[in-house]
Each structure stands twice: as C-alpha cells, then as structure tokens.
Image (cartoon, rainbow, N blue to C red; front, side):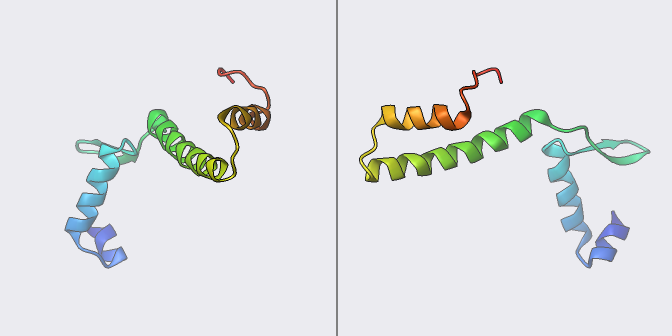
Length: 90
C-alpha cells in the first residue's frame, strides 16, 4: 500500500481508503498474511448498476414522450419493438 501511494504521489490514508471502498463494494478480497486480490465479479453490483442506467434512460424517454404527446401504450409498443420481442427471461 505504501509503495502504491508513493508511486501515485498520494497519501497512504487515501490509498487505504480506496482499498477499503473497493473491498466494501466487492471488488477486492483481503487475505491476512497474503495480501489483496481482485475478487470474482460482483454480479449483483454490476446488475444494479445496469438497472440504474436503464432507469435513467427510460426516465428520459418518458419525459420526451410526455412532451410529445406520446401515450403510455405507444411508448410500451416502442419499447417492446426495440427490445426485440424477447420475453423477460432473455
């Protein structure tokens, strides 16, 4: 950690905080006496991030639709077409 802080020209406290945040979010695993390792992908975290991005994009689409007088049924139709007719499991 000290070497990384020195190489990046930042404080050890900042480096330690970054490691703690990465571990908290499931990106790192610390093994006592062995060090820090990249954790297997945190699938739930990644999925939640994608859901958040989709929600933001859909909110933007809803705002545009409301301004343009597009109904919810029309918007649902467009979404179904854009999604490619795939069911929920795909």
